[in-house]
Image (cartoon, rainbow, N blue to C red):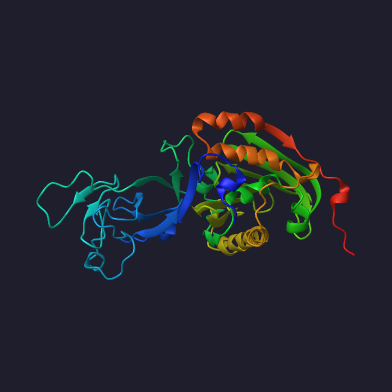
Length: 358
């Protein structure tokens, strides 16, 4: 798959923003989770307080991996995670969440000031762990994506689907926000009533209403509001008998490779969801995952599209790609891109776009 430079996105290989790096259920007490994102190896762990931390994977002492071990007595004795700190399984040097070594058990001398490892800004939200990535090293300039439905007891929480790795540059995933024309042949939409995009600084929104070949609503119109908050976290609200909130996240592992998660929050017909509501919610989530899998299969079997052969009825690919470039360039250049796209763009599809069966 093509690399960032081939798309001409900007100065940085990886984009700035919040990205999912773990399912919170993966963080077992006393055991770190090894991960690789943005071309770097790291470990994620939950401290005694319950707070989640993410640090560089390799010990500053002799380079041992802090999160990959099964035989060391540090691991066997249950001293791998102590308080909010993590111990190296090799020589037991311990590092705090600030990255500084706070204990060398076999030494009575001062701890070297250079005994530090890199740390990452992470927050736990809606069952996931999100990391702030910024090539410039700046603090977050917007909040972790969050929806109040998560706190509504009528909703059944998602159990995140781990969809694995995809050898695809994320630019191709973001293209979907403008891609009206694929809704019919790929997803089975019919009789499109409306399709529009709105660009609002670091947020891009897609509003879509159409019939569907298999999914039926009371109004005959399947309506979704879908948006990216930053470059890596998509959410979508779907109306109907069981209102739902979908999340899809993709996070760069290396240049041209991403890791993907999916989940669906489903509102029950009770003020407080009951165990009987769980099978219905899981069935809806599976239907949502299968719909997303239609995109996933195509993405996994396509060549890079560096310059779309665009026609007017395709949707505003050029605007989405311009919007996306803000995350690959210094913050001082962001307005160069947002000023070109901010606002609403409405797409129209003629009736002749329908594919007729022979």
